[in-house]
Image 1: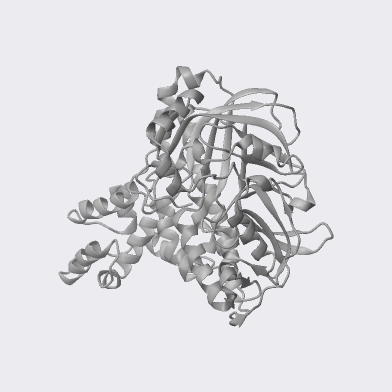
Image 2: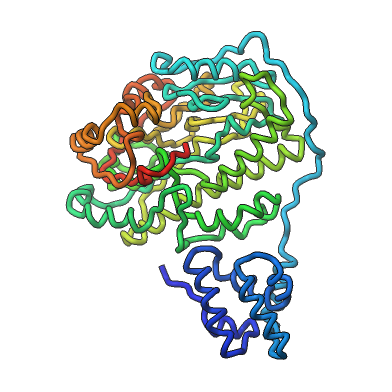
Length: 509
């Protein structure tokens, strides 16, 4: 990627013609640029705004405060910086930029709702592998007055509100933030390369270096260089105060991954059969796979609107995390827009990582496969009823859906084609599912246990801790056997070089 910098000529275009000012402006400008705080275009706009109104910037705490105080001082001593016509055009373009306006539908009123006496029936896949807590949570979800259908996937385990691995269809005017999950649009992305799989042995140091250089993990992790930040040009970033307040953080974290079970890894993809959707010849391919979501941006949206939902929709204690927002209210409209923006942002996060690594390889992928597994969609039941389908840790598996179901760092993952099974609400598992909580895994397993498992599977690991050890997860083969009605397996992925967050990081998922 070409290195972007802000130069003295850029400053002169704005109207900065002052020898003493150049180093001060350039230090601030390239500091913001090199640390991935803002793109170049936004920094130049901020400078234009600050030159036009240094007093405004100097009396508020911001990243240009000291520079604004200096610019204000120049004006006071008769050396005022005069904004150029080009600078004025930047201000005018920003002023005329379209703002996203949500419809004014009125705020949601506060109401109390009882649960149904009897839960609606729903299909359970792989019930022998599912803990009682997850079954109890799903039973409660099926008692909601807005619930119309549900299904529980074989990797299910207990979460907040809807169990992880739960799929819930509600009336089309309702959305449940906790049934989408805290990590909105947690998703998978796979890039398949036309390169020999022997590279994993021959070039393992090179491949590891690519992961280290182009993937960043942790709760506060940020990426300095951006491959494509055009997502931030969209008007939705102006839609609500919360989104506007989160935009800068979202920009800084573009191209990063979280903690917990999030990863970026190299492995071998074996295409088992020809399929028109997969569109790859049978064979083995060097493949990059990533798992992450919408970072702090999505987490803040989830927490904000989950709290509002619980304030406005009062439910019995056991169901309080299943509180919903009315899609006809301003709160519901705000959440729906924010959720979808978080989905596009999560996708862009993965694309940043994949584009950068593909560029480092000097290769374009033969195929890219991706899917959300924490999201809500407008769909229809088999009888045509319009619904909102919440998949919290579940892979879309309609008849035209390609999806990725990973397992642990030593078990195979799978590329699947959905069978469009109405009883399963066109869904499948999103992984193997945990059989040990993080606390239990940290207490029972040892580093020797982990290293023995890695050695047996010939997997190299960067980062992670014992809470992500393969022994903490269910057997993916049993999980897949329990959902043959839901998916057709097209390819098998074997992880070989795995990068995760440092073990000292607190898990997000």
